Length: 271
Image 1 (cartoon, rainbow, N blue to C red):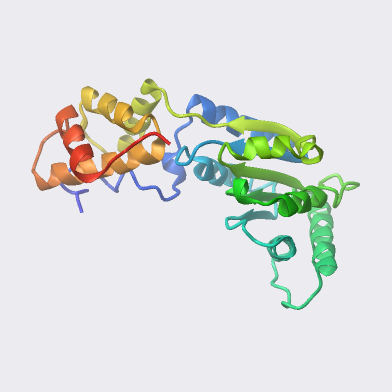
Image 2: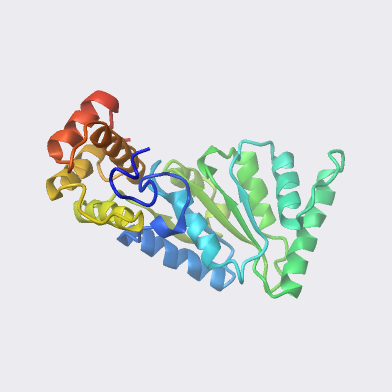
């Protein structure tokens, strides 16, 4: 809607995954390097934690793209609130890349996962399971995924599990020492510092094709303070500011416009 007015090639603050817009903040880059270590060395499990909106899913998508040559199959669970037997069935379908009849017993699904691991080993690939929103897993499901780590234990490839969730996941894991002991790394994403927020917004505008400065320096700092450095909130506020600026035919966006957009269109508060 506003791209032509601001001389942009695309909307710069969409929350949809696009690897061009990935910004390697200190905590994001640290997490990426740790997770790459886990995958490249065939380690058993890792945790990626952080508050909502900090870019956990985006980071995992970038990781999958970076590692697609060596990590396959790469199964991802985005709705973890399944009974343990259904979770196993879903993972078997994803890892084997074939949907099984609904009435087969759980032990056959386990066998399909074993075969998928063996097949990956034959092709010198690392099979990976990512469970998003892992803080929603109940005790039975967490025990199930722990047991899955035993599959293919004698295989060079084995199975790598990445649990992705909000900080509530960490104390839950502390209460499950058998699973916690299997975690090779724990990564925690944090909110952007002010310089990171400014660099993040500048990066996204540049990738979107900005030919001039649309946000003043003061506006960028105002966005950071109003969103508390949360990338999802930054995206929402900046997108709305660009829309309002277009509607009002402004040439630039300053801190007053950012404050007005916040007051009128969106209430942004720390989580």
